[in-house]
Amino acid sequence: MPAISGYADRGSFTQSISPARYIDQEVEELSNYLHRSNTLGLIGRGTFQELESTFEECSLKGWDGERAEPITKQVLRHAKIFLWSFPLGYESPQIGAEPDGAITLEWYRSPTRVISISINPGGRLYFAAIIGGDRRHGDGFALFGVSKDLIKLIEDVISENT
Image 1 (tube, helix red, strand yellow):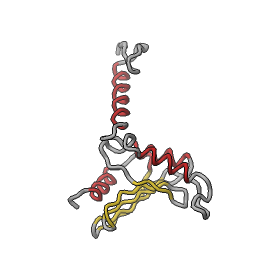
Image 2: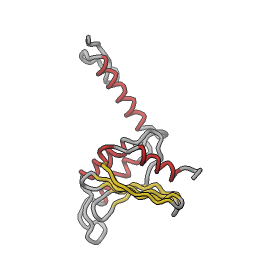
Image 3: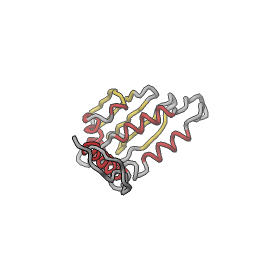
Image 4: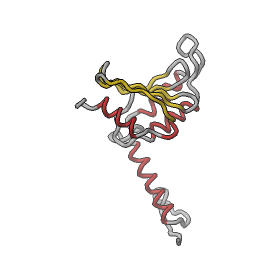
């Protein structure tokens, strides 16, 4: 396919690129912009800043005053990848740390409407949800992004109709 000249980095002239690569760059730039918006993006609403703050507060062994394992840069990276995979417009979770070195993401409405997702150093995630009388739990990998099933559980927790 012939190359085209484009403005792929905000107006400065770049070398010739393929139409497919140009479109990929434009889509990535738009996605980054939307993820940073206060309305649609978890970045814009401070979720990633809260994640960084939690990491800073809990990155030393014994951060809890006891024997807690530190949150590692690898766990932080896994959590960022996982959160980045959420669809635009999602409600931000509360972010916490666990003594085993995991990061926790939680959406809470009441004692009978809550979901907690824990991301451990190996990139594995574990979740537990209570939705009315229904209890669900399971596991997966944070690096694969958020699954449709997990999105559905979160929606069931945060929905006003449940």
